[in-house]
Length: 351
Image (cartoon, rainbow, N blue to C red):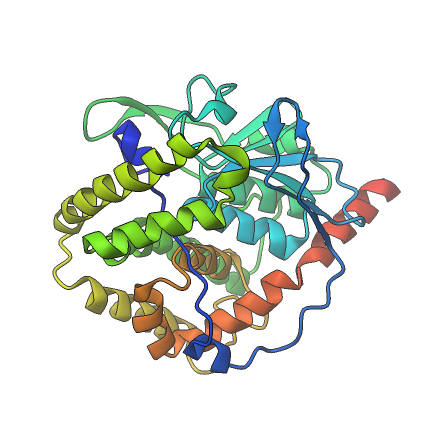
């Protein structure tokens, strides 16, 4: 979660809801969910951490042993989860306490989410994580550690003068071979729209979700439910997170609205949805064509962070983008990209 600087504000990544009997139910899905990937909710603590859930694909032989540290409804975390689910990775999921953040105490320098650990290897920043894992899928000749070396960090400072590390090629997939003109154009389009999701669409979420006190409080009460806080956090921490978080984000959303020159947050969200659908055009199911690309997955994940909120009901369900969203919902929940992961393993085994 990148744009929240105050520690108490770190509890707020954006909520998603579940609307019963909404217009969402009226939009037909492309196919029923059929993938036999197993989801467990362990009750026992493992490595001093209580897992929120464990996603198991018995055909994932990558041996990455991924563990995602997250806030359930953070848009950046939702992006990473959408990627992992679409490609059928096995992974463990840990809900981070937004007050103490004790679950990520191992990360002494980086205190944001999402964080992924694979053994002793740590991956940070949502778009960088997605690019690194996407490159891992494309390069069966490389280990994950070798892939990470393809994304060097550059020391810099942010607008407040604080030291930061930037990754200039974080939207690139390192395929290791020259591609034709059409593929290069498709890759460029994918990168541009992934940047659009990070640099514009996600910044529209806070002003829409936290636009008044009631919606802000509603959002944080949903945080408590969807994040299973009752399983992991004591009551006093849950109450603190809900009320302090709701107040902090209600105020911060006004600052963000001004910072990004947003006058009418609902109208800007509508316009963003229309811009996306115009980019896809009438002849493609997804921006990636017949199958989603990383820009599709990123936007779907970001939208899931407020799925069911008033903004989703009032804007997304009233726009043509809802049909694209339901197609994405189907292919992600069916893990339809899993054959890419499974075929990578077969190639490695033959080498």
